[in-house]
Length: 333
Length: 272
Image 1 (cartoon, one colour):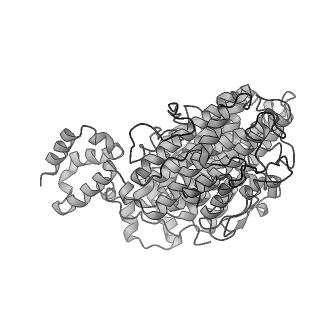
Image 2: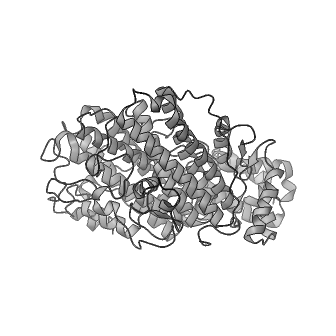
Image 3: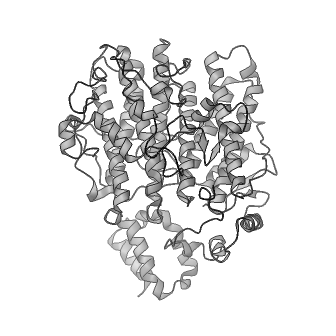
């Protein structure tokens, strides 16, 4: 077998072949210099690796990897349709925030494209806006967040409830990606892991902005990042999570619909990659970090780390925002 | 504790293409070095000099190398905010209470990250990198604009660094710990960016921003474009749509070394 002739032929047949394997172009450089080091026996294995990279991994994704990516895709749809719907409702998103919400909506669309691409034929049919119940009523349409998409309804002056929901959704997202990352950490899925990490940090950026907006709303300073956070941080939060943010935003009916977003998952303690403490956790890798320095208060330590959430807990939160038709499609189940 | 950080750097599992371009370097070296934790630290120290750039300290290989790389970044960030707190902008009369609170928080978070990483390295018999000497001579700590601009650089760099380092981590426990830190760095970055230019918490310099076409049918989004069954190239600053521009350790350190004094400059020869 003439290995180099094969590559040349491949490139003729598919001019994008070399682009597809761009990350490994150095391999070819090396081959050019020292190709003789590859023995004939090694060629089939080497080729298998190339083809896998060039022509897709969807058929070889393991079930746990597919499950992580599918849940991520479902969460992206939850967010995308929420922001996209809000942008279409006149008078809901204050003018100072239209650009920001558009940016966030667009990022979620990008994430949907990226995840659908990686899942390939394993991707579920696109979820529709009607598959979600943004009232948080599990399909009743009458949950505690029902005013979030109604301009200036009770609790939603200047979109306050909308931004509260955005905060809860993006925090759910960042905790879910964090929980899923170890499952993507296999030799065959390092590129997918990195893509997930690159989505994860964008969700955290979104979340920081939602929190900044909520501080501004309380200070009547929309359009400014300079408003002060107000303890206990449920209404005017910091851009990071302080303990459990007093259970998160309060709904007009007085309930705390996002409290599970900040609480522990299951199990709550154990090794960092298989346990899901609440956001008020102060111990990392077996060390209580408040013992390292007297200025390291529990609040400061909790702020310095975000915590992962397990898939089951993520689903139980997201199911509150799933309609009957969504459930029929298996959404978040 | 020993389950959190493996006592010795784990060999990456047989990755078909690894032997092609790393034929006989560190990885295969470790393959034969069934060292104890203490011996591994010695091996790391010995290896560092052999393939690092002249005049730099190499962070090492394996999970230990990535943890020391993170420790270096956190040292730098913590030193920066400590200096902010003694500088003219923070101590002056024009700073708002809100911004003062933000810098108090940032200084604490980064110091906690630094001390956590050092404690974790020591608890696992991995020799921590030495205390690095920063060089912030290019920053005017009396200027709000300059302090915020530098803070943005450090935070954005931190996010790109953790994201680009994740793939080199073998232990899931270590990956989980990195994930817990990176999202807080992203929160910092977004707020500093909003303070400098409102609404720029995400922008094209740090995220591959994406503009979707309007869906043909309201309430339906099927994705668009030709499905690409592999993720876009990562680690080269050109990720898939809506994703952070992760960067590999050598690329990050090139920028970071501008803020480190001679004798504290770093390299990461194992993580190209």
